[in-house]
Length: 487
Image: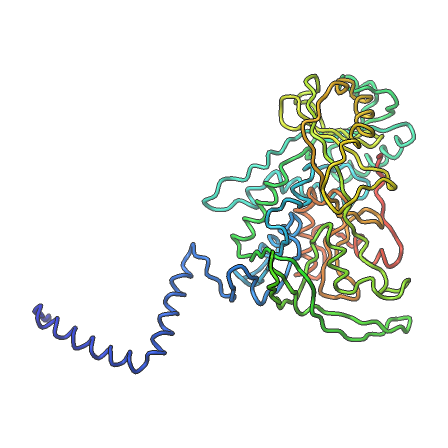
């Protein structure tokens, strides 16, 4: 049966019900306030909100995370992306990225030349760059975000051109064989072939050249960094702008095979200080990734790595320090056009095109005894005029007439031991993973290295590319692995 309720009767019942509810609310005010808070929280958890199950105070990092990544450069954000990519359940792995420079004004990733090449001598470096090139060419399949513009890396597919003197030509031939065997598309050019292909090059003193045909060139570093960052955050990674000032660890003694006793540390908390403030937040965590680039040696030092007696495991520091490198922007109206490769001369200087209209960037590494002061990013313009320009205009005669239109400086995370990456844990700190020491080629290898580090963390070992040669143990055993480059 259906009942028809008049307006007056309905109003009476509603008023009666309201009085009853009011009594209940007055009796159970605390309970109702809890329900209200729950409803607000549930509403905030709808798609598009910034609600999180982790307690977060605005401006502060969460109090707890499974994995804390120290360093929000391209390597740190690559690790963060792959951690979320490999997790089985949404928010199954709580990841926090801590970056001390919210402006990224001194970030090595942003201040690099953005080059990518496969022309290395070590198979690990070749494979890393091959895998990373594939990632970059298909970047929107990996880092595209729904309802956001596609990622445009501005990838210039102009290969690297290495020039070799008679002394190092045999090394170039050996490197070429390794590169081709691993799948890199590289060709060798005689001086005559080089002149035919690039007539603006002075071939005096050149015995051989190596030129990359595919998967080499340069791209915009900031776009890659921001793409990793935006994608990782869309997948649930937490970002915090602050500086890591220390760690809280547990420790226990262990006996080595030689009968010595060592302290094994395990990080429990990471102390994060807020920018321009004395306020700090301890973050409880299970794993720490040291992706601090040029500052990674300082981060390791906070844990006491290297503080023990010399010639012992505890006395060997992380051999990574900042090294400053200058990049000069020059304008040469008669310089090469679109056919300009990323040129590396055996004398040490490099040059590549920067956009169109006769603009280029160039530079070179200083001698070991001439390393510049790293306390600032000031540019030494005399270094260009005294060191770079004479070599540049000898090899490339059109550059006798040029104008320096700009310059900047950036930091390398320079591995003083063998200038190659350090990937893996320290034997005395079993839950800190290093991903540092790339000495200039970290940006180009970041997609593949990030994946490899995550395999080490989540799977317990490398699955795609074996990077065990880059383990910290080689430093303990004094077994460097060196690149045999022509520069």
